[in-house]
Image (cartoon, rainbow, N blue to C red; front, side, top):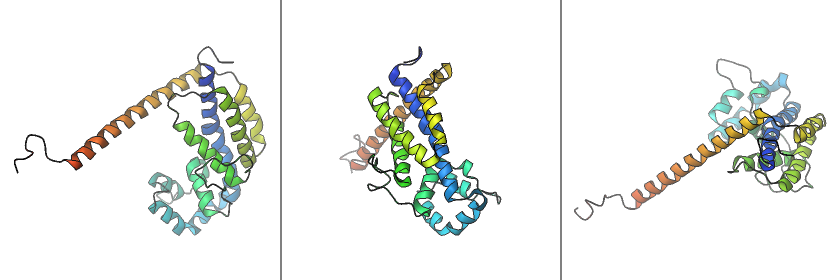
Length: 221
């Protein structure tokens, strides 16, 4: 049942956002820490430094992420400071994890339940959520997607996440959730404006490249 502040479709979006940005990173971190023991994290990363430098050269790892892998001033890396994108990147490239049949950039079939497929599954839904313009999810899609995501979360992080996911699916969303929704809408509006500005600038650049001479001097040279 929708709250007095949000429509059902907006509630679905908020719940999905909290699932994918709040719960899923913690589940992925459980898997990450099982592959890269926290006490040995620095030595494990140091051993793979040549691969990591190549990933940075290819812009797969950003400078910000690099500084978390190898903190300046001889700091020690901590997986709690790694974002989900960085953890998935390291699991993909530095472990023997079997990739999903369609690769990491497509939604795996529901029958694929390996860790690699579940990482791709979480990545896919996070990306799709980020590209929703109206901040709404219809209820039929919500039910199907929620089951797909939470099943992957529990396989990756353990069944201790099941109760948390179940609670998030049904708990009352209060005024705080309404404020979150307003922030999401505001952010989406800003993103749309930035996209429109970028598209306009790109058109101007393309036009200039095709015909660089201003109208008032064209034909005078």
